[in-house]
Structure formats: C-alpha cells, structure tokens
Amino acid sequence: MGLIKRNPFGHILFVKKGLIRLFALITHRRYRGFNELKIEGSEIIRNLPERNVLFISNHQTYFADVVAMFHVFNASLKGREDSIKNVLYIWNPKLNIYYVAAKETMQAGLLPRILAYAGAISVERTWREKGVDVVEKRDVNPCDSENIKIALEDGWVITFPQGTTKAFKPVRRGTAHIIKQHRPIVIPIVIDGFRRSFDKKGLRMKKKGILQSFIIKEPLDIDYDNDSIDDIVEKVEFAIEQHPSFLKVIPIEELKEAEELNTIRQWEY
Image 1 (cartoon, rainbow, N blue to C red):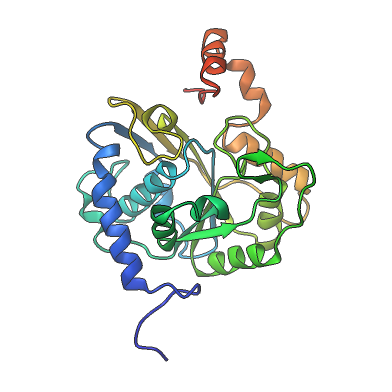
Image 2: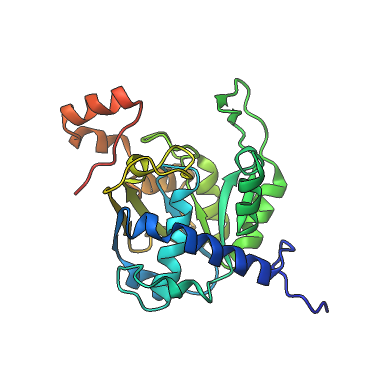
C-alpha cells in the first residue's frame, strides 16, 4: 500500500486539497463581495449519504457554475445555512466531489488542465466537437461510462445533462441511462445570474453587482425499475427548469432581449 493517498483516478489527495483551497480563496469574492450568491436548500446537502449522489443542473458557464457548487457544498457540510460566509469552510474540503466535463474543454490550455485535477471526469461528447455539432454522432466511449460509475461509487458527481451552456437545449439521454443503471440519489440544482456575471468560460468577471441564485431541490422521485429513459429525461428537464414548457412563462420583452444576446435567461420565481 502506498504511503501517498490517492483517489480511484490516481490523483494525489493532498494535491487535490491544496488546489481546491487555492481556487476557493481566489474565487470566493466573486460569489460573496463583487456579486452575491443567494442559496436555498443547503440543509438538503447535509442530509445526503457519502456516496452515489448525482447532482443535475442547468449550465450557464464552463467553470463558474462548478466552482460555485464546490463552495456551496463545502459550506453546507460545515454548517453554513444558505451561506458561504467565512471561507474557512474550505480548509478541509470534501475530496470525493467530481464533475462531468467535455474532454476538449478540459484540455484547452494549462488552467483547465489544472482545474481538471480538482475532480473532472472528462468525457468525449458524441454530438459536438470544437463547438460545432457533428453530422454523424459517434459511439459513446465505454471508458467514460465506467469513470462515472467509479466516481459515483467513491462520492458525489455533478453533471450538466444538457451538455451545453445554452438554455432550453434538450437533456441528453446519456444522463437518464446513468440514473437508471447506477440508481444514484438525484439532486436537482437550478442556477441563475452566472451568465450575466461571467464570460462564457466562467473565468473572467464581466459585471459586478449581480444577484446569482443557487437553488437546491429535494431528491428527484424516480422509479428505477419502471421509469423509461424518456420518462427520466422529462423529469430531469422539469427538475432543472429546462423543459420547453418553461418558455411559455417568460415575458415577451425578456425573450426578445435574450434573442439579441443569443441566450435565454432562466425564469426567476
């Protein structure tokens, strides 16, 4: 047995801990200071088991969404009530948190490669390459599915089932297959404000004074034996508020503004 502790993917845990601490300290004021993060449902995080939990969320930036989740999850586990006040909660972070990300994104430069060490499960997108939809979808890499299984067996996994930062895109069926096969507890999260606060990559702040919202919902009610893939896809779309029916309640003025910005804002309750 080695003296240096590693996770199932071979990452050295004390290195991973150091990276999470560093990035948390650097980014904290982006969510509490320059902008504010309004959190709901942190008590749900504290009641979850140590392993086999799948977080599903809408997606607004490449990295800022995930970083916010690391903040909120660790703050909640350290007793913060819907708050990330006092960043010392990150001193002893939960190390078995993983997030699913496109391989091409995580290999696009030194910084993404460093961020990947903090917990990325890099997967090859079958429908898109270099920002362009492919005509012929490629087969799913079995290694990707196996890595997600390994991550769930070790801890918590974050995934963005639409596979894109564009709003109201269809949920990918692969997420439903993961849910049906591995039977995790599925926790929906709905975020907003990140698209207005950050650039598309989520690395550069583009506007201050934005109220970002982060809503954690109760576990999704899934019949793993009887729900079909289509049933699960629909449940996921409703849970993360990305079902096409949500478009009907967006004011027309806001929809026009969204078209001009080539994006659609999340409907705020």
